[in-house]
Length: 108
Image (tube, rainbow, N blue to C red; front, side):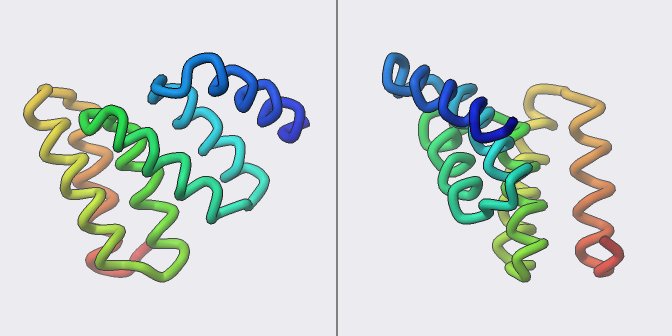
């Protein structure tokens, strides 16, 4: 199922290569397939196209933590938190703060 969605998203990316949402969406699909390298590349591409794309910071932070890159994970999560604060996204702020605290205490 995921593979079909990935193919559809790849076709859309050919038409709209600079759409950050498409890169984020394909990252989620790769994540669901446990294709972590492709997921990471997709989230990073999303952020290179839109450095304010809050969900990509969160997904990338969690992914990197799960790949045992704690420091890199915290960097992305703290950057996402900073952007969420600037945009006054209260739900995102709470989620980032909770996740950062858990990672710092290695509770995830």
